[in-house]
Structures are given as structure tokens and as C-alpha cells.
Length: 277
Image 1: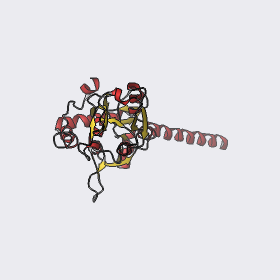
Image 2 (image 1 turned 120 degrees about the horizontal axis):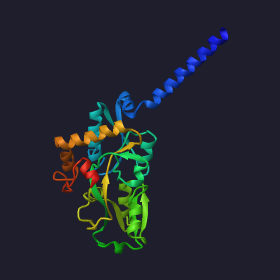
Image 3 (image 1 turned 180 degrees about the vertical axis):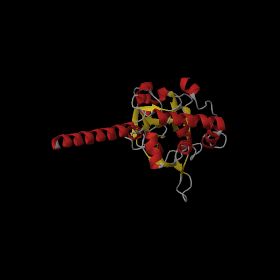
């Protein structure tokens, strides 16, 4: 009888342990975020106008990506928390659960869709090229056998190689360091997202010029870990709500549009229509 009781107790313990594992496996990321009380967003540390320190006294990061992080955090009823990532680490950080959202200007590509899920596009832009105004190059053919700074681990380097096979893309960990290489003459051009390049160029008006043609047109989205449909749905609904309330246009105007030095027109909206086009 004692042996049977012991066996029953062991079976019950095993059943309870299995149930606890099943419960942990079924808990989604939204539950984890709410229990933690913070939404961890992977952003760039010095990526104007996406995420950067505008006021050296407050040392507070601001920017387009920060606005998006704050909006999703508010929808979840938690506080936003920024974790700085690089172009090379932003997707692995999401995959490994160290950040909840990738908000470091992540271009949506078929290859990346295999690794993470994406929200509706929050920005439509293109991969552009800038060169010094003192020695401007206007055509892609002008970059043959030239050194071009790009971000490590991003889609820009491969785009340069496809369009200009003889060009020499050189990777740097951040947009700021890639731009510094151009300023120091270590490269003859820099390739990157148009909006990011415009942000970098505004500190030295007239010193650099941009090619009129894109290497490729791009859409950026918020990266979410695979198999987290609840979190992805909340992110998408937040984007739709921002569009409906006018917050999306307001944020864009502040960082890229009418109220910014870039004066760039907004030719897209948050939602499935932009995703489909």
C-alpha cells in the first residue's frame, strides 16, 4: 500500500510539473511585458532622427522610433524602456527575447520575415547615396571601384553590391561611425536610408549632396518575435490608432516633415494598404 501511495504521489508531482511547463509555454509575450511593467524597445543610440539625445542636459533619447515605442507602451499600460542595439544585433535581440520590439529602422525584407514578424510599415523611404559636394558623383557608375560606407549587418551593403558590383561596401557599427568615415575621407560615399542620411547631413548644410535615384525603395516595420500574434496585433492596432488620431502625421512632421529641418513630404499611411503596395 505504501508503495502504491508513493507511486501515486510521484505521478501527481510529475503531472503538476508538466502542467507548470505547459503553462509557461502558453504564456505569451504580452503577459510577460505586463508583469514586468515595461516594454523594452531596441533602438539606435545615436541615429538622428530616429533615436538620439537632443538635449545634453536631460540626456533623454528622443526621435521617431522613440515616439513609436512610447505609443505601444501606452497601449499596453506599461512604461517604455529603450535598449540600444546596432544594425547587426537588432534582430537577434528580438529573437532571443532581450528586447520586445525592434525599432532601429528595420527594413522589411523576405529574408528577415523568416526570422521575425513585422508590423504594418511605419516608414516608406529608400536606400540613397551621399557624396561630398566638393567632389560630387551623380550616377551609380561614378561609384565603380569606390569605397562606400554602410551599416554592418544591414541590407544596404548587399544593395550596393547588386547595383554597383565593383563598388566596395565597408561596414560600420552605427550610422554615426559610417558618416564619420565619409567626413574623414576614408570612403568616397555613404549609402543608407534616405531619412537617416538627411538627418546626418543637416548638421553640415551644403557639405554633402544626395543621388537623385534610390538604390532600392524600402519599407520599415516594427520587429516582433515570431509566434507572438497577440503582441503583433497590439502593435498594429496602435499604428492604426496613431493614424486615426493624427499622432502618426504629427510625429512624422516633427522628425521628417514640415516641422523638421528635412521638410520631407509624407506619402504613406500606417495600415494594410501601405503593406500591400
